[in-house]
Amino acid sequence: MPRGISQSIPVQVTPYESYIRLAERMNRITPGNFPKKTLFLNTGAEAVENAIKIARAHTGRSGVIAFEDAFHGRTMMALALTSKTHPYKAGFAPFPPEVYRVPYAYCYRCSYSLKYPSCDVYCARHLEDTFKRVVASEDVAAVIAEPVLGEGGFVAPPPEFFRIVMDICHKHGVLFIADEVQSGFGRTGKMFACEHYGIEPDMVVTAKSLGGGLPLAAVTGRAEIMDAPGPGGLGGTFAGNPLSCAAANAVLDVFEREDLLARANSIGNRFNQRAENWQRRFEIIGDVRGLGAMRALELVKSRETREPVPDETKKITQYCYEHGLITITAGTYANVIRVLVPLVITDEQLDEALDILESALEMVSSTRPAFAEVVSK
Ligand code: PLP
Figure 1 (cartoon, rainbow, N blue to C red):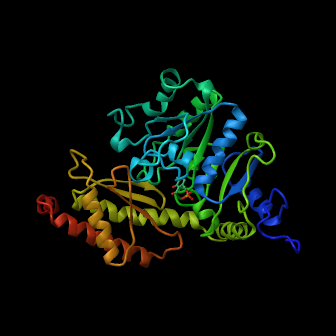
Figure 2 (figure 1 turned 90 degrees about the vertical axis):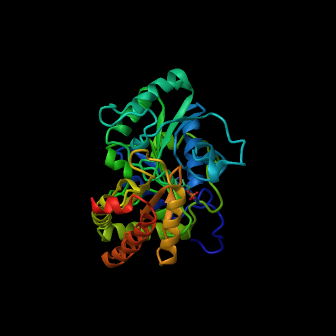
Figure 3 (figure 1 turned 60 degrees about the vertical axis):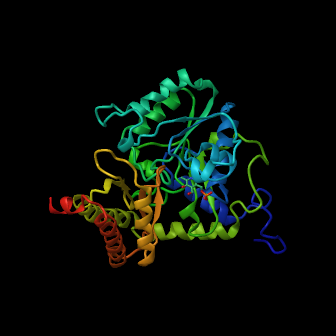
């Protein structure tokens, strides 16, 4: 950086090398073999807002379709796109208009009471119907989705889901935005979760792991789409500041040096081995799911009714906390325990954490009348 120029002068005024280098790297590593451009912001929510602005500028349309159980952040547009009411949305209305919501492929709690695969992924195909019954496709700029639900409970849709959604989008000139804020950077065993689905989104939104702890977020997309807003339309004083860009370049260096994607898969496998055993022992575990190192347990009263148990879930996280393990719940019904461990965790550390979680499951299950019966099965 030239002497005398303060770091608070944004890149749009005085470009610097670390931003350009990082943008080029993001263009390379995100899915899609086409010309791309990247814009850096500070937070995931800010990046979501900017992706919507870009989609509107490019298409000249205003509508946005988001999914049930989605989480996209806490700013006003991001909240409009977010699904869960408490604690995120309640009391903060009104939200920006022109947001429409459709069911996600949450197979464990299918909105249409169908079963995969005999459903033929009806929830994805239903988007055509939405364009007839809810909002005209020519009024819709974009569909935004998390490739794996984060706050919504680590739900990974069936393999065809996003391909079908994207095909319908493109048939109608609607853009597809993947929100990889939580699922990006190796969490699922691939650099980006959408790679599991063989899709190339028009824009990918990233944050969290990108800056390795410093505030940084990005929108990476097709060059012709990213160029739609006019000069000065996008930006921000600290958006993509030199310090955060240096940190993110260091993060990508580590990904190049160490095989963190393989590590994510081995973490996932290690978790799954334990979770399969837990599922045999504990009736409370309704569903075990996720991709790579992004894993979750959905907890229920009984496997038949699938009734969520937020209170017992809280007891488990409290027990874990008191025994040295920080866990965090997820899911619209606050009954999902998510496991999102650092990819640099050792096997010993992971086993120690899973031992505590297992004791917590034992503790809660022992208070249930059916426990002895399930254990003896
Ligand atoms: N999108 C997703 C999928 C997220 O998980 C989050 C945060 O958890 C956000 C957006 C918002 O990111 P931030 O908290 O950086 O604004």
